[in-house]
Length: 389
Image 1 (cartoon, one colour):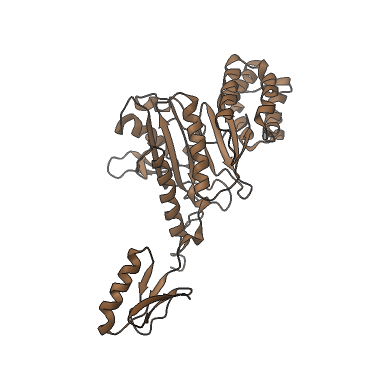
Image 2: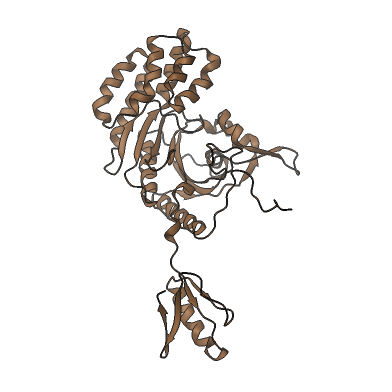
């Protein structure tokens, strides 16, 4: 009985004023999405498991909580990511051949924390574009992510741009040359995500291609002037199949389209954010005050094929819990209890303040004391005035 009040490990709750800070931020972010032409959708927290894991990798499967539906007997999953839900909506709930922009905001649940002490219940807000194959759609996603973070008060972030096509071409070349065992491909992906040169070299046989794979994580993340280094990078990738160069040229074009005065843009061809379903340009946004990416996304063409509609798609999401401004709640006003003869007069003053956007709580007895830090509503002559604490 003494432990019934405890929450599961990694499961957190938000209390005042942080909870209200999250709600205000959610509204601000959705206002930005809608102002860019995105339609708001609210997918269910649980779905049939096979729908949630469409196009995803092993990581997302391991992060998804699974239960048996008492009604149908089928397996249900508690969503750990909302992209697949947006894909399903585009394919079946809001069917169109035109370009479609969808946005969402809500909690997801992780079976395990991604890092120690991290919440297993992030609050994700994201946006997706379906039916647009052009780089302009990818650039719009990057720009929208940066504006979303700006609304949340993040200044001078670092934007990393990558391309899954370059990584996959390099992996294929390593497997074809015998420098990488195909069974180690998933392990290599995780090593590159961690940007661990030592672990990468341990998985590969010594060769020029292997060394190129090993140095990419450290070499690219130090690039603060993409335009100056892109020709050098292209020369290094000349030995890879033609699709690698095509992907690199696409990355170079995207870097030019999203050049931002409010953020540092870096090219990082080892940037492999997300759960593994991306297959084109990818990006992540970082800030020195945070240890992990604040926003991440990219292109994932064709993921909706399992739903019967293979469409070009690109998007991103951000965990709003990482960006909450806990001090955003206005200072409340306390209206002390008054005798019945003055109640009507006091209620009129309270209603007027609430209509003007003030937070006003009323005393329920003569003994009730105002909350700490609250301003007081006091009678001055014939009118009621707010008195600062």
